[in-house]
Length: 158
Image (tube, rainbow, N blue to C red; front, side):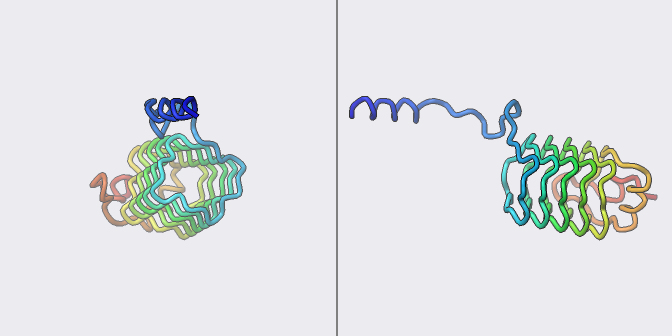
């Protein structure tokens, strides 16, 4: 019994590593996560490749450096999420709420942006092709509450 108490105390007194350990990212690749609630979670460098994230809730989530390649994110809610340096290539975002999200330096090639809400989203230095930029500029409005950058300016809209 005394050994168990000593073991428990020593475990509780050991310093814990940071929750967002970039050397061992969370992996949700090929997962079925439709309607999953990730709101407010720290998911730095998490892997969501080929995942079904339809109707998933990422409101205010920290997705910096996350990999979402080839995932389905139709009608997902990414309001206020931080996707700085994220890889969001070949992702279907049809009907998604991207309002106030941060996509600074994110890779967004071949992502589908049909019927998305991008009010206040920041796309500063994001990698997009000309057709994506043209499409997004037709619906761009607002200012990002975290970065203070206008959505139209971040996309280089004319």
